Image (cartoon, rainbow, N blue to C red; front, side):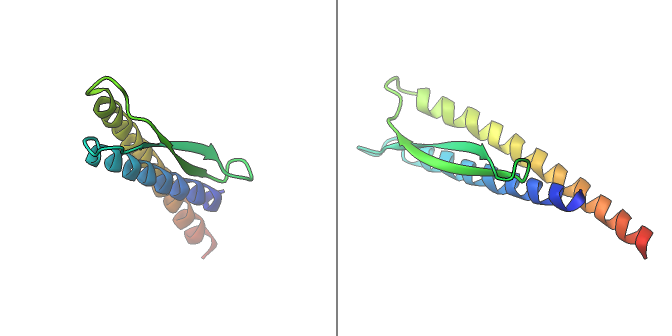
Length: 105
């Protein structure tokens, strides 16, 4: 159990970091002519519960000025929280593995 939790936590950290990278790229290029913003799409890994994967697709920037920036900032906060939660899963799995190793030694 701790090993699968460790893998799920690590994949969650990786996916959220990649999503943050996507949003950072969108913000950095807001004023670039003909820039097509990207969106991060999360999906469950196979087998179920093994972690998450991330795909990136292009999209047009919002027509209303400032909307794209507000959305990117909101998404960045959400991805940061997701990364932090995944890091807690990794921390707890690590603690359980240490306990199991201590018991068996």
